[in-house]
Image (cartoon, rainbow, N blue to C red; front, top):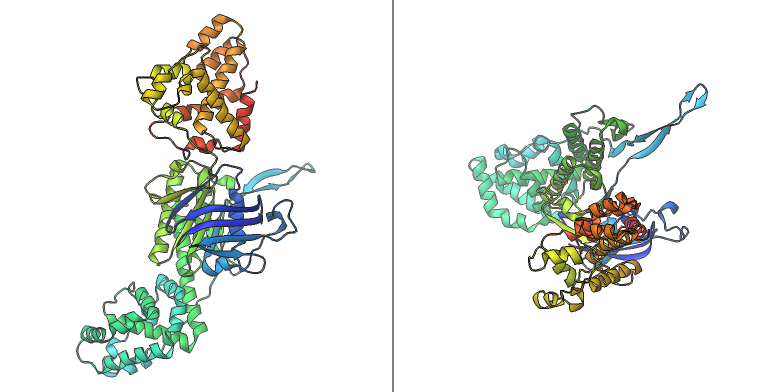
Length: 576
């Protein structure tokens, strides 16, 4: 199963857009886009589509279309599922969960000498994990089931005792539809045939089970519903005999037929215990260094209560809230595939907490896989995908949501990727990757040795090529080379600085000074006021022009150039 595209109409920053998604199950799908692209609009679309219909209020709609209807669609294996104001085909097929930062600015207003003095603070609102459940007793008549087996009553398992474990009950609850199907006449006849055979068989419990398995196993395997429940019984402690598992299936069907409501409540309480235990264990693991978060039952709900955000470190706060939100996704007992959208939560964790969060996420994926379910994990981020490389998330897929506007030219691929080649290293450094007023002609070397245009082998023509790529970047009408843009930024900053110097001797010394930062410092020492942005952009052009090996538009520098604020900063740095 693959989700290949999404369509968003009239939700937050998107008026009407179709985006390539191409996300795959049971791995981390890293959806990369710059700040300002609309990642929060994507997470809002999924958030609005978690109920029985699309619930988009006026504040969640496009600014000029508040009165118009919204719509959200996803393409799954070539077929479109749509959510709008009247229906939600998405949640008919998937469980959908969205994880965002829950940090909220608040203010207390104490009065000091009669004067109100606002005191700001950050709050983590309590996280609702769902409805609390009451204990339910199960009315199970073990004697009646033993009577059906007569002299071989020894083979009859005690359902409530064998299936008491919360994880088993949670799994049975997820398969309740299969248990319902096992009450049908055809499958009941198969169960009765097995019971009659076992009642008349001779030998030990294991002997009887082996004989029954030999006679009826093929018929059992042909029933998808019995097979589904049988797979759960494999996890029951102390079950060695095939007949044990078959009789548990029969007893589950019998309990469901006799009083389905009571049976379901019994299973739900077990699932509730499993979820509550998991929540407490997780919080205990990351809560041992400070006092604060607690799982509580309050007014019929299970909630995680947090301390004030300023009582926690940023990493502890974000990790705790992320983990608890992921646990909330696990509260839903279902067999449907699941979509989990994580909106930039990872972007602000430190190295240690990012490892813990990745590990926790990988374990969540394993839990879904262990249940035979598919989970589509979507990490929305503005970060370089290399940030997520690591052992825990070793299985990952990167999708660039904003693509097509950048393309690395062969010239920059060679100049940057092979700049250490001794045949041109010194000349590239002096005349091509830094500004130099003199002409330098390497046309033959560029063309014959590296297969590049002769024009690019003349340094001032090379500067013109870089300027053209910058113009394409500004126009947004054509593909541009992000590495050429970065080289232009460096060279143009140096060119402007060079001509700000009035004395020829100063200009000569500027040219002979190694490194852009040192050149700018020389200018300031000579009385030229250099904008701070020229220094700050060194992170961009130095990163771009000192790459090693192959370069492409998926690199971190290409992502940075898609940032609207950064482009504005570059414009200012090239006009002073």
